[in-house]
Amino acid sequence: MGSFAVLPLGELVELLARRAMTGALTCERGSVRKTLQLRGGAAVAAASNDPREFLGQLLVNYGHLTEAQLQKAFETQEQTRVRLGRVLVMVGLVAPETVREVLAIKIRETLLDVFLWDSGVFTFDDAPPAAVDELDPEVPLAEIAREAEFRATAWSAFRAQFPSGAATLEVDEARVPPGLAPGTVDGRLLALARAGKTIDEVGLALNATDFHLHQRLYALANQGVLRAAAPAPEVGAVAVEREAAELVERARGLLADGRADEAELAAARAAELAPAWAPARAARAEAEAVLGERLQAELLGGTLRPAAQVSAPDLARMRLPAADRYLLSRCDGKRSVAELVRAAPMRELDVLKALRRFADSGLVGW
Image (cartoon, rainbow, N blue to C red; front, side, top):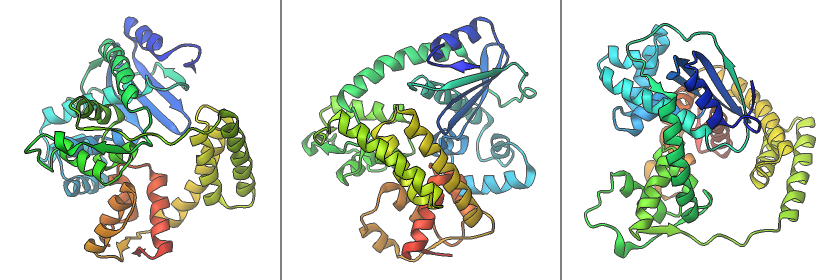
C-alpha cells in the first residue's frame, strides 16, 4: 500500500505489468473508490463507485440497452444473484461479445480516470481473482499505460480550451453542420449548450465520462461550432482560503448540532473552493457519510415509489438543473427509490438528496 505522492500511478502500473502481477489493485481518493482485478499483468474486471463507470450505464450510453431493459435486468439479477453481464446474455438482450467489449471499456475508463488524480492512496492484495468467466476481457496494463500517456497530451489541449467544468458554452449557429440530427451525441450536446447548461451538467445529461465529453467539445471547438463562455472574474487566493476555512468550521458545528444536510452543503462548498485542501475534503467526507446514513434509513428502508406531481409539459417549462430534470422525469410512481438509485448516472447520495428535496417542495409524492 502507499500514496500516489510517493509512487505515482504510472510507475505503479508499469511495475505491476512488468512483474505480471495477479491480485486486486484498489485506488481511493476522498469518497471515490476503484478496484481492478489483475491476472498475469492484465486487468480482467473492474469495480467503481462512480456511476458513470457502471456496466449498465455504459451499455445504455453506447446504445446497447434502454433504461427500461436495464431495469428489468436489475430485477432478474436480484432474483438470481447472477452478474449483470451474465443476466443480459442469458435473457438475450446483449450479445456476449458486446458485454465483453463494454467490460473492457469499463476497465480502461476506471483506471484511466485515476491517472488524472492529483492525490490518492492505493493498496494491492495479491489474492487471485475469482474463477475465469468467458465474459471476462483481458486488458494488458501496458496498453492502459500507453493510453494514459496519449490522454495526458489530449487533456492538455482540452483544458486549454475548456479549463473549468463550471463554464457554460456558446454556440455559433452559422457553423453548426447542416443536417446534424438532434438525436446524435453532438446534436444533444449542442441542445444542452443552447439551454445554458454548464459543461458538468452536459456531461451528466449525456451520461458521458469526462474524457469522452471533452473529446466531443474539443472537436466541435476546432470546427468553430462552440466555445467556452468567458469565466467570471477570479477571487483572490487568500480570500478563497479564508472562506473555505470558515465553511469547514461551520460544517463541523452544524454536524455537532445534528444538521447534517446543512453541514454537507457547507462542506461541499469548502471542497469546491479548495479542492486540494485536506481539511475541506475530510469535512465533506464526514458530512456526506452522516447525511447518507440518515437518508438511506429514511428512503431506502421500505418500498417508497416517488411520483412526480407536475405534468410533462410543466416539467419542460421549469428551469431546473439537468440532474433534477432527469430524476423528475423518472419519478412515475412505478420505480422504487432503490431502482432509481441503481439506474441514475449519479451518486446514491445525490439521488437521495434530490428526492428528499422534491418531496419537501411538493414536486413528488410517495
